[in-house]
Length: 321
Ligand SMILES: [Zn+2]
Image (cartoon, rainbow, N blue to C red; front, side):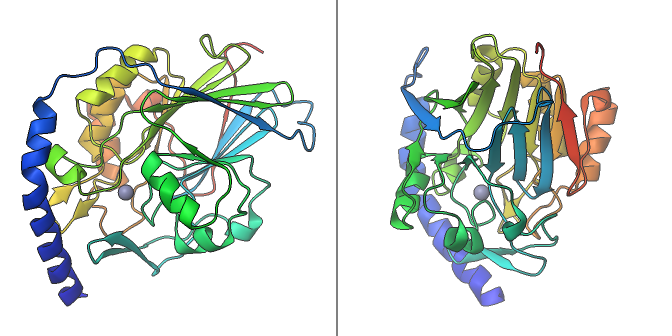
């Protein structure tokens, strides 16, 4: 393990040196003003009709960044990770992380899934078990980079989105728009060596511009300039799922939000409710959930936080039926 860490350290630092000049140029370049993305469509087979009382939706926390969102007959799975306590995931450059928890349910216990939203291709978000066992026809919405990996793995229905691209999903009468929004896995210099990250905004309802319910999923990101544009373009976020953990690689580089960042994120995107996820699950997570809870309390935001233990379900009601 120690040898691995040293090799990983050397590989990463070498890559960092090479990347630094390029990133510095890119950071100083002109910013796109109001970029508009492309629009794609996904029509899902109706399958079993939604339950009659399906006006409410649910968010079930499975563990790490894995969540099941159900709304009016749609079942969405995020960042599937079904490995167990003690299992290792590879993070590139010879680096790995050990899982500290078990998922609330096993992969085989999942209900039928309509689509997967994958924030990025790291094994703690799309692990070996999932790579092997997930149905090859499951639609997967992710970054262009991850979609290339998914193609190599044989997944047939890939939707590769760049920032502000949209996917219009329909299933019977149910409508959902997924918009890819900015995310950056670490400080600018480090992030160029890590996978591209897709945040996502889910607008449920017949008119996505005036959604019945709006969900923001951060993905593994830090708080940086790109995050402000999410709050500006998507006011009135009903629920934010924030990837916390303050994950560090080589004990040096922070690559996901810690407790303080999570609260700063809330202050920027202003969700009505926030559910913290992606915490306490891996040995590279340096910021326990308690740190976020302390910060939320200190800033008077704790009333808007919903804490789910693994397996817990949050039920939400749309703004209008
Ligand atoms: Zn990651």
